[in-house]
Image (cartoon, rainbow, N blue to C red; front, side):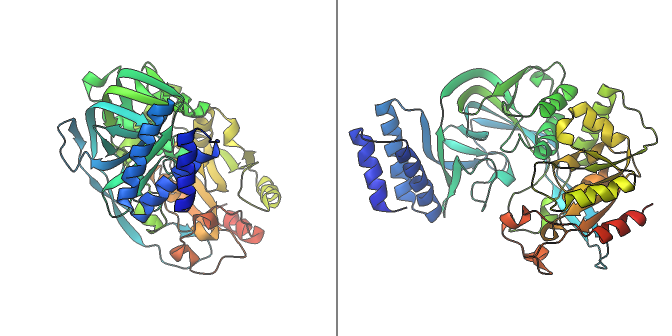
Length: 439
């Protein structure tokens, strides 16, 4: 991105000789300036875009705003209601089959629970909130100054060396509601994030009687299974589905805290971002079991969580053939309704599968279920699935996969998120030995 390119884009806009390319060029330059710490340029660009939007009747929300941590600092337009204090959470790193490395005991903090209420708020982008000329920081993992923030990076980035952020959001619809509770978040279409981070927020809302029947603002792009889980927890609660491309103004907005800390960055070890809130998970599990009439019985099924059509295991046919020999059913949970997924995991005595969103359902397993997670070698120290299994009382082991680019120790120094998402192969002999060790 060059200054000459930006000037050309600006002149094209002012003279009316522009294409669909120029807004993207200007947005990229706006974010580039913010990331480089060019504060003056960022402020000027934001002001320029606002005036241009008014002149051309465009629907683009562009701002350079101070970041407001509404829990750590006081603002006269926001009030905070404490729900539960922070607490410590301890766990062992997962056991890796065939490796003799010691399982290290880790301790992290589960964030405190609270609800912040504010007046005259605007929800933009991937559920970012703007109020009283501030970008509201309500989720530590969503801090715009982090090196990467999934779900919000197309709309928001931090301004380097300044407690502020650049916001750019193009919308085609504008709506206003008098009051709402923000339930969804930047990654809510992802089943794992939805269940653990966002649906679990309802735990903090339920004790507050005056919030009963205030509409829950949820992502209009969520999958049916996610909506089914919401109906299981809140069957009679009004819902406001927020369609992407909508700028939503809320006269009175309530934001319950995120009960975990699951950052997207690889700048910290996996274990530091593996806190689980057992109180919220217990509430979800017990409420959903009661809703579906699921009783605690002796599980009998053995399932393999296949991921057909998704990146994962290169030699998946070999893996499936071996598991079928051992009496496993091959199941793609993406084809199942939410209740079917819950029942499947509650009925399973042994589960094998690649680490992914389906493993979130481990919270519905019965104690004693045995789980083998098939992991890329780059992510074999990933702890969150092991912690989900531990919450339910499952036995859990990792079978580390193979990849030609992997070198021993990479799992401790990995900084490239693309490597985490590469498909990998599973050594069939190792997998067979792991199965036999549990049969």
